[in-house]
Length: 85
Image 1 (cartoon, rainbow, N blue to C red):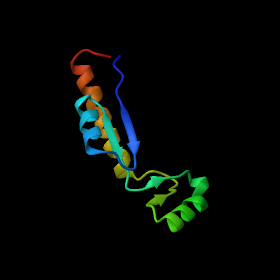
Image 2 (cartoon, rainbow, N blue to C red):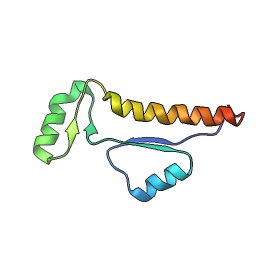
Image 3 (cartoon, rainbow, N blue to C red):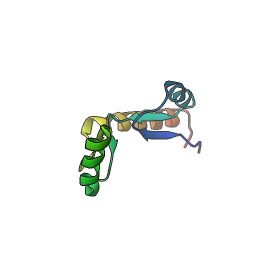
Image 4 (cartoon, rainbow, N blue to C red):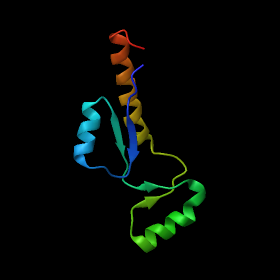
């Protein structure tokens, strides 16, 4: 099985994203830097004091997860159509 690079990040240089995609990888870019829900007070302080886009949601939004799921299903489909597992 071929390893497939996947990154979930707040930001990444476009040149890195291009290289990642060109090598069959995926970049899930978030609007906010995510902290665990149990660290919501820390996230609030970081947001307030450092003026950074920070959040600590209980769950990742459905649309965000759907982007990853769609990509994943596409990769599986391509691998299956080429007889690769």
